[in-house]
Each structure stands twice: as C-alpha cells, then as structure tokens.
Length: 110
Image 1 (tube, rainbow, N blue to C red):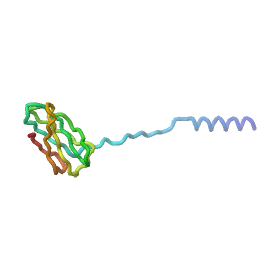
Image 2: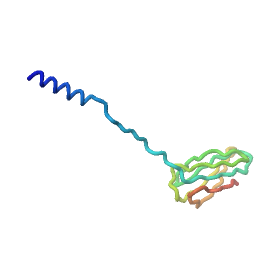
Image 3: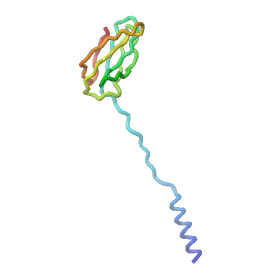
Image 4: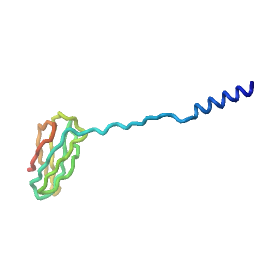
C-alpha cells in the first residue's frame, strides 16, 4: 500500500512539475495613421507640436531650410487639432488651427 501511494505521489509530482506550453504575446505597436510634413522656410530650427484638447504634444524638431515628415502619436486619426511651430531663438510660435488629422498634412512655416 505504501508503495502504491508513493508511486502515485511521484507520478503526480512529475506531471505537475513538467514543462508547460506557454504563449507570450506583446501588444501590437500602435500604427500612426497621421503625419505632418513640415517645410521650415526659416533659417533656424523650429520645434513642432500638435495641440489636442488643450495639451501640446511634441512631434519633433525641423531644421532651418529643411522639410521633415513627423508621425503624430497619441492623437486619434480624424481629430481636429492645432499645429504649432516654435522658433528656437525667441520662442515665437506659428500656428495653424482647424487641421483634421488624416493621412499626411502638408504645412509650410511660415
């Protein structure tokens, strides 16, 4: 009887402690459907922001005399926003309101 109980305990422990099939998934990366293609016609860089719901979200910096496509993250596609570009030298801000985020929006500063 003891032998039978011991064998049963060992068999149960072997099954319980054996390898398990585990699947690990990470959340899919949120794809940004919207982008702003900024052409900076100034001779100095600007910091570009999108304002949605009263909060500025930094998109990136565009050098003077250059253009850059900046993906818009953290704002839903189809939202109406205000774009802002702030000069580095004196913090003067250029803005464009009423922009609907869908696809790529072209914006020239100034």
